[in-house]
Image (cartoon, rainbow, N blue to C red; front, top):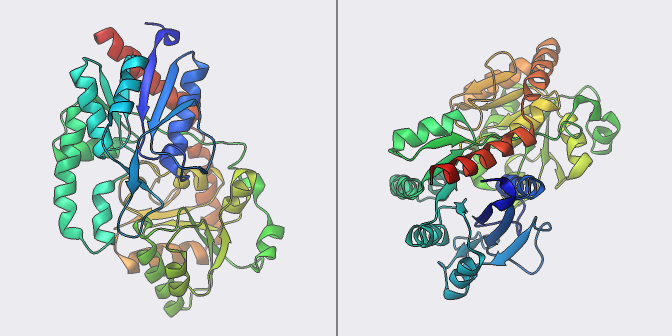
Length: 381
């Protein structure tokens, strides 16, 4: 089958109503598919004022606000008749599901009942979320439910080899392929570093800025981040904390890193400037499946200190582009950051190595892997 004959139904739990790395990747994929002549129809909960315009046609899936103080996200209410009728009229060749929620399960069931091949892509380690909200005892159940979900799909695409290994350890037996990620290399480059921008935030030229980039939610490792900054302060290691991003935990985080500079949400070339203006990028999150922000920091020439977990282990070369640390080892994080703060030559060398390593991540190549998987599934069918 040629791409211009292919019809894809793409389900997302959040296609564009709140901006995050997962839906940015999905919209980039949709654009790549459309450019190749593929017909794409996305299905997702929607809101009146989304964070950004949807790529391609978007069909609303009824949803309710997520409980537990995270009402900015929606939870699909299954697959009501109006959506099933829309799917039937659309006649997709493949159903691609990117969220293991109730509606995602129902999409897989609908496809199976109608003899349509299915592909599931994994974007977020949802099974880790309970530990950040006082319900860690639910994590084993979340792993079992995730395993069941991915075993129901004909094929699974994950962002990194580390995630493929993890799914095999869970017991996922469906064929697994790699859908990596890309970088806008014109936007994320050392050339965008701006001392003027840093000065406008009150960061002096000689200060080492330890950066955080991402949505300000507890599951991004904000607690560990704050503990490490406290340890650096106790050691008398000079630094400034530069936080780029917004989210519901901003107030909580600000209380725990009172000396931090909050630059707020940045986008476009302003985001590239903010990242390149960091001196060390610190990412203690264990919920990442690839680590888009990590590759963006590397591309901008910023050395990385990250959790030794999925999302970083396939990206950071220990001692070359940065350091990997056991996820909850506060002292080890502080040791790694202190080395970089106190050794400018090491920072420069690690940043340059990261910039070189990041050149391999190209969106066109990454997204073509998904299209190739679709076409292979159709040939097998």
